[in-house]
Length: 458
Image 1: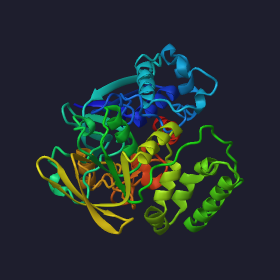
Image 2: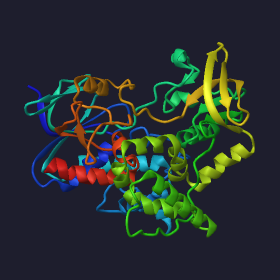
Image 3: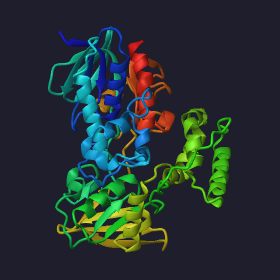
Image 4: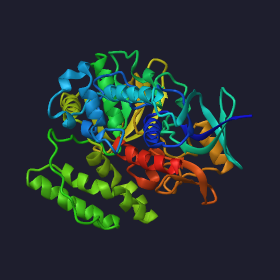
């Protein structure tokens, strides 16, 4: 007979851990919980497992608490650590600290839960991979790769970002040791030849991390970066500007929203202020607006406006932005607007052809490797994850209409292939991006975790 748990959290990254912490905080009656994790240290996931101290958070310290009930939890944790005395000053909340520090915070948080005196909770961590979940009369049968199956009355899928699976022009080179489809594979930036260029596809936050890692190892050759629009993320201001509080949410029409945002951003810039207050003022309404937009307007946003939103919304600490810009100014980074067309492995190097929008022609270069930094794969029909593939095949889950993650309600209730809510099957985090749009950063995750904890305890 399978071991039974009241709650099973599938995924032990930041989302899973923050949900676990919020559940511990709220539980007042007996509850058995299993969290299943594999691949990365518990609580850290991909994002916070980095050991590179130059990989910084792109959210300020004051907004990174794991709890909605204690906004200063992360800030106070740093202040309690003598080894981080350099950060112990009055503007700590405005700083962007190393992601490895946040990983240590999550690790400490997990250890505090393990040692918790909350006698209502029986908790087990299972280091394994979930390969399938089936609905049963009493809940769910959760099949593990290396252990016996377990039963769960309620299940929350915290599966995180799925790695990209391909790039145009290189489907026949997946086995090449010069082609890195997954940029989070540590080997992507290891054993670099200092005498040959590196080619990167994508110019967002993942590219920035990759470049920082390359330069940190002493790489001094060319880094060729090609993306659809040829623009790096903008910088956060050194000091945050006060945020206006609008009396009502913007209209639920993408044309009106875009026009209003452009006008307000231009006005802010004209008055020598930053655009940040405009975006921060809209942020509390973003999920509501997104859910109210018709599907055709969401698709129009993704086709025509998303790149502008991403550039403004997903910003860099100013010191990181200035560093990347200095590499562009010195021509160590060659940044192109264009698209990858073809890659050939010549044995000793790669011959890469890409379309350059500025010249409206194709260019060919030689590089020692190519690294895919275009971001995670959202279409679950394309991913290699056995759990998602099996649950899709059985119809227990379905992808959302935009192919960005799970089909679900705004409250994280999973919707199956027949369009029905699956009782007691939930998700939080990046899998809700198609439903909520803003669903990946800690400020959103902790709110979702707080609300989901109330739901699974209800």
